[in-house]
Image (tube, rainbow over all chains, first blue to last red; front, side, top):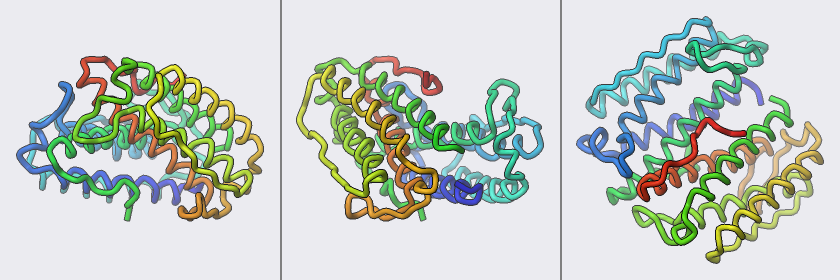
Length: 150
Length: 150
């Protein structure tokens, strides 16, 4: 799998996650949850806090994990999502192919090869997004189809 | 990422999914759900129906998607899971590296490169397992940690 194909795969997942965020009513995004878990807005903020910062770290070996924990309007969250999309695309093109196999200590605590660290971020997004699907179903809202990534 | 690393990554996920199955009380595995979704036992059966059959298809270009839809005891499901683990390991070693980039029409309906088809199976497992986490939390059960894959 080429770096370009991996980016395309991830951005396909991110397009789907964006649709899941957008499927929540604004007044449920940071208030509704099940099983005492975090609401989907908080999960999406976690994704944002890991995504572009992880790629930036792989490019620069500087690690800055700052994520907003505050409730915010859906439109503001979607704007941050779109900003991250652009950042990821721009940073990705600065990663030399061999760097994907270099070992980093991400955020000073997660040691692994760059491609494994990126896989963790993507897998974490899929994991939490699946939880968002349950929230949407419990709210009586049909989630976007899982296979649609365009 | 080498085929061996990809297999290891997937089997790590499958070990975690096995722990999630095992975390369900036997009487909840096929009965409990949220939002009118399928119970976790059915989701696990879907994973089993896709996993080894997909790898077998990539090895043989024969596609056999048979998955049990019947309720079964947790131990029986875990035995099937372990059988699939062995099948996947044995079949994987029969995939020549270049075959991961070959295009297949999986199960007569899903057209894609082998590595993309396999990624879909893994992503689908993570997605549905995330839903299982919500079920467990709603049942008052602490799910196994997401980052533990040994």
